[in-house]
Structures are given as structure tokens and as C-alpha cells.
Image 1 (cartoon, helix red, strand yellow):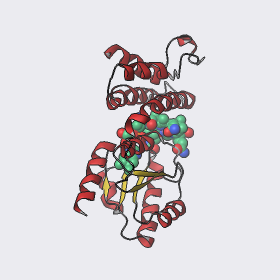
Image 2 (cartoon, helix red, strand yellow):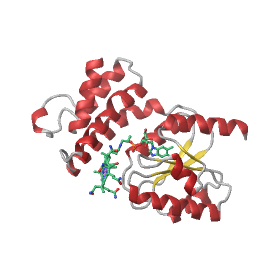
Image 3 (cartoon, protein in one colour):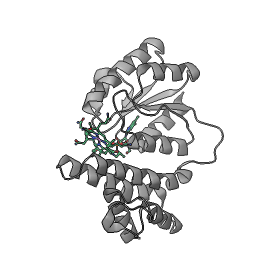
Image 4 (spheres, helix red, strand yellow):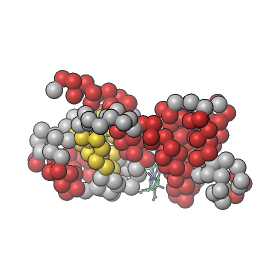
Length: 224
Ligand code: B12
């Protein structure tokens, strides 16, 4: 099983989606992210472990190559695609059959930013913990967050950013939400986000990964 996990990491890093995928040419005909994820699930490997031991390390590996000029945008995209294909199989495990939601979380990647892998994981984990997710997608401007709050005024906001240049959007959006819906809790995350930045722009919290976020929301729900 450890070997399967490693093979899956390799598939994500190389962007091998499934057995039929022609890319990358040197892996033609071999199992891809979809088959390996399926086999791991059949072997009862917990989906959380598949995510943290294979998928995220694979994405990090291609990210590092990109940082060192050894991989380029097309490679990142195909890796992201293979990650998303694997996540589709994990999704049902993260989403429980619970019908009564703990509350609503409006999620979006902020204006100027198109990275959504992290946001989607946060959404899956929250959904699995019983929260209703309203996913606004990527490149979301302040107006769309406000529109969502009109529809779900009680909801909690989660913003994601992966670019240092889109951090500014977080500040703008948080400011506009504060003006219009002053009681809304706003949480932020994404690789360039820090607790200092959260304090600076006056949002309610920063979490580096979804599990601490979910725990925090559960406490919040209990005390209110
Ligand atoms: C994949 C990727 C892409 C893909 C995105 C595909 C997709 N559908 O998301 C594509 C190819 C499109 C892309 C494009 C670009 N990218 Co890019 N990309 C990456 C890469 C390799 C991985 C990001 C990722 O998915 N990580 C995996 C996920 C699971 O981690 P995560 O997003 O951090 O999320 C976790 C936590 O942060 C947290 N979290 C995230 N959001 C939230 C929200 C809340 C509320 C909470 C609580 C938690 C939370 O939970 C998640 C799960 O644990 C990173 C490098 C890296 N190592 O991070 C570069 C990186 C982010 N990209 C970068 C750049 C420069 C770009 C481009 C500008 C490249 C270009 N020249 O065109 C464009 C920008 C496009 C745009 N306008 O957004 C830079 C950013 C540099 C900077 N400091 O700003 C990075 C850091 C690479 C680098 N070192 O140069 N990219």
C-alpha cells in the first residue's frame, strides 16, 4: 500500500490522469491517478491519508519543480487535472449523508486569482463535517461575496488566495463585507496568507489547512 501511495504521488507530479491518458508519453498504458486512488480506497486506506500522503505531496513536488524552472504552466495544469480527477473519487467519503447542516460557509478564491485546488479541498472537508457550502468559484470580486451574503446572511465567509498579488483583494473584499454585513465572520487561507496578515486586515482567523478550520468552526457553533 505504501508503494501504491508513492505511485499515486508520482502520477500527480507527472500529471498522469488515468490509464487511457496519452500524457505523459513515457507512462502510456500504465495506471493513472484514478486507478491508483480507486485501488487505495478498495484497500480501505482512509481518504484523508490518500489526500495528505499522496495527492498534496504530488502537487507540492510539481510546485517545487515550477519554482526551480524545471516545470511550466502546462505541467502544473495537467497535475492539477490529475489531482482533481482523484479528488472526485474521494469526494463521496468526505461528504456525509447528514441533511441538517451546521451552517453555511461561502467559499471563494479572491479576484485576480485562479487557484482553486486548496479551496476545493477546504470545501470538501467542511462539507464532510456537515456544513453547507456555497462555492463562488475563482476570481471572485467583492460584489459576488456581497450577493451571496444577501442570499445567506447568516453564513461564514472563507476566502482563498495563492498569489501575493491577490492578497490585496482579500483586504478589499473583507472591508466591503464589514461595511455591509458587520457581524459576518471572515476566515482566510492559502499559501501566502499568514496570521500577521489576518491581524492586519482585521479578519476573524487564518488557518493553514482545513482541519484546524473545521475544529474552530465546531467550537464557534457550540458556544453561540
Ligand atoms: C497548481 C498551481 C497553479 C495552477 C492552478 C490550477 C488550479 N486549478 O488551482 C495554474 C497553472 C493555473 C497556476 C497559474 C498561475 N500560478 Co500557480 N501555482 C500552482 C502551485 C504549483 C500549486 C498550488 C496548489 O494547488 N497547491 C496545493 C493546495 C492543496 O494547497 P493550497 O492551495 O495552499 O491550499 C491549502 C491551504 O493553503 C489551505 N487553504 C487554501 N485556501 C484556504 C481558504 C481558507 C478559508 C482556509 C481556512 C484554508 C485554505 O488549505 C488547503 C488544503 O490544505 C503553486 C506552488 C505551490 N507550491 O503552492 C503555484 C503558485 C501559487 N503559482 C504561482 C504563480 C506565479 C502563478 C501564475 C501567475 C503563473 C503565470 N506566470 O501565469 C498563474 C496565475 C494565475 C492566476 N491569475 O491565478 C506562484 C505564486 C507566487 C506568488 N508569491 O504570488 C506559486 C507559489 C508558484 C511559484 N513559486 O512561483 N498555478
